[in-house]
Each structure stands twice: as structure tokens, then as C-alpha cells.
Image (cartoon, rainbow, N blue to C red; front, side, top):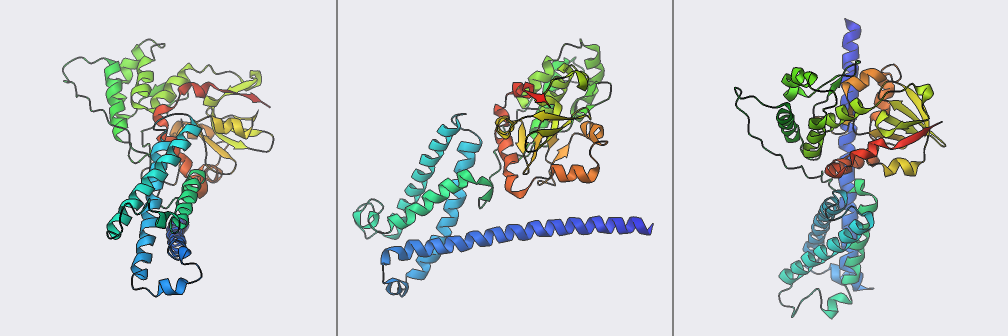
Length: 396
């Protein structure tokens, strides 16, 4: 009894310690941003003063202008990250990475300069013409303001996880479907689509919170809670009639439905008789120097010959730490624990022999520097190609 209480108190203490460290880390993050914006504000407002910064600092307007510039820089930082999320992370206009970057770069600079010019017009109404395009401004203060915006725009593209505020990818639109009359006969296909609408409604702020599909040892599967009444009807259907699951994925981006569909299609073979494995079979990949360790969906372990470039090219494989990639077909992010990953229960039960709880938690805990990769995955979810899961890796 005493030992159980000690264990519970230890777990509670470790949770509070972890939560406190994350909170203090975030506060430090904001303090650093505020400090850097303060320094940049001084650079912008005193740069054109040359060798006489004291005269400008003695002005009555200097302090309000200085504080106002700090606030403006913080707002610009938030806006640049918002534009980056909308245009690059979500691939708003194109799937071409270089084209997305060019659009983001030009769009962000134009928006910031336009807003800054409007603010100058409001603050300096006595100046004739457009202040931002005036020779006096372009030859002085502009060259101390523009490089700061330019460098931060490039910095956010290179290190999006270090943004002031993380904008989660925008939620997908929920399709509201009419609830059929219980007395009327409903086809399994329609009911599956309705279950997908419930699943889509559970997605919020870029965090996919879909219910997991349970896969038994016999290879049969059950749909999420909203579709459990359909099980008898589905089992009576033809085994090859898997179109409703595929439609559910295509219409609602329901990953559990796609998981069931693909695993039913997968022909299991003995590991000794295989020369390759599919990306679908990999749940956790730990990249080593010349190979990678793979924990498979069926509870087996193998090694593959693969490069980091190949792993990064597959959008289903998300890098969450220095060496670890996870197949997001099998994972979700819990609503109340946004910094953790949760594996499908059936797949987890298969991997318990290979991965004890402590080792498993260590592998699937995203690092702070790479946690933004999860947000980027939710942002491209609706553009993902399921055929990428058929990509094959050579066994060592």
C-alpha cells in the first residue's frame, strides 16, 4: 500500500517537474524575443543618428517611439510566422518547395513593408508624400529596418520551430451530413462516411484527434466508436469490398480507416523470405550511421539499408528527434497532451515485447526543436498520397 502511494507521488512529481520545466522554457523563449526586439529597436531608431545617438535619445519622443517599435517588431514576427504557416506549411499555392518559398518570401516582405508604410503615414502626417518611398527615409532609417525584417523572414523559414508563436495548421472544414431516419435502411457505405464526419469534427488546431481503429490478431478490424454498429454488416460483405474505407480516407482524411484498408491489403510474409519491407510496415524507425532499426506493425524487428534523405522524402515519416522517425499512420497527438505521441493500442500491444514502456516513451517523445514537424504534418494531411506507404526499403 505504501509502495503504491510512493509510486503515485513519484509519477505526480515527475509530471509537475516536466510541466514546470516546459512552462519556464516557454517564458525564457518570450524573454529572449523581447530582449532581441529591444536591441533591434535601438538599432533601427539610433542607426541613422551616426555618431550623435545621445542627441536623439534626449528627445521627448524617443522613449515612446522606441517602445512602439518593439511592439511593432513583435507583431511583425507573429505575422511572418502566420504567413509562413499559410503558404509554406500548408502549401497554399503549390506543392513545389522552392516556389512556395519564393511566394512566402515576396508576400511576407510586401505585407510588412505595406503595413510599416501605413504606420509611418499615420505617425508622420506632416511629411509630404509617401514617407516609406521618400528619399530621406530610404537613404537613412530604411536600411536599418529592412535587414531586420529580411533576416527574420529567412530565419523563420529555416527554423520554424523557433517562432514567437506557433500557428497550428488551420483545421479542415467539417462536412455536416444529415442523420438518416433509423427506420430507413442505410447502406454501410453511407454510414462509414457519416462516421468520418464525426472524426473530422474532432480535428482542431492542427491536432488530429481521431479515434483509433482496433486490429485484432486475426486480422479483422473494428471501426471507430461512431461506426461500431456496422461491424456485422461489414463482415457479411465481400472481403474485397474495401471501397468505403478508401472513400472515408479520401473524403475525410480518416487515417484509421486508411490503416485498416492498407493492412487488409497487405500480404503478410515471413521475415526470412523477404528482401524488402514497405513503409506501411514500419511504425518506428531509428536511424543509425549506415542502416536503420525498424519496429514493425506486427511486433517484429528488422534493419533496413536507407539514407536520411530517403526517410525525409517520405511525408508519412515524421522526424521527432535526432535519430527517430515515426509513421504517422499509426500515431495521434492527445488533446490534453500536445507534446506527446500516442500509438494505436493494437499496434502498441504488438510492440510491447520489443519496446518496454520506458524505452517506448523515450523513443516517441518529440524533441522541442523538432516538435514543429508534427504541425507541418497536419498541415499537409489533405494533400498526402497514400501510395507513398507502398515505398519499399531493402532489408540488411
